[in-house]
Amino acid sequence: MTEPGVFAVMYTTRSMRRLKPDPVPDEVIYRVLDAAIRAPSGGNTQHWRFLVVKDPQVKQQVQHIYHKGWNEVQALYRNRTVPEHMGEEKFRRLLAAATYLAEHLAEVPVLLFACLKERPLPPQLAAKLARLSGSSIYPAVQNILLACRALGLGATLTTVSSLYEDELKSILHLPADISTYALIPIGYPRGRFGPVQRIPVEEVTCMNRWGTPFKRPV
Image (cartoon, rainbow, N blue to C red):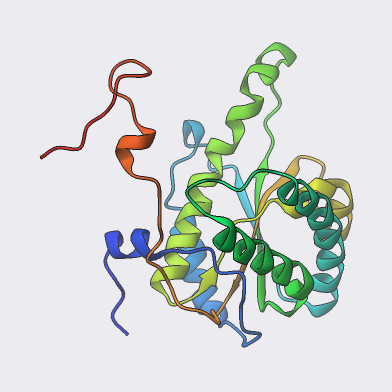
């Protein structure tokens, strides 16, 4: 199978939440992880850590936690205004797919946790950098999503299980200084890839100062 080019991959990497239970070979997951570690990280610390979960019992425990988190998140989604760029029908399909994942998570062949080893920092600096720490793990997560797409695998980025981090750490035997930043369910997709639909660049970009439009070149 010929792997698609980088732009074709980026333009067709959808969040795939309906996945087949068919096993994914370890050598394929290794390629995905090898792509993940090519990402940048703050100070090149490479403090990312990854946990591959395939054990059925562990997956069942993770699903129980995930389902609790999804019940909380789902209520927030259902009470908010539907984004204009999506429309009611597309938003309804998104919620249905997310609910399906919450109810079938244990059937997904691979649950990949993207974690970060926390660095000890002075309190005054830790407070300032709290919202920036994800910059050392989320580029690796994006590489995982793109690698999965290139290899014909479906995947999605979700943070729902991290709402119950303490319970999750207990199940996964995570050390105190390791925190989960994302759960990526990986499997062969039941649906088809992209293309993804996004708000145009000129509607979300300014030039030099906020409020000055960035116009599409002609």
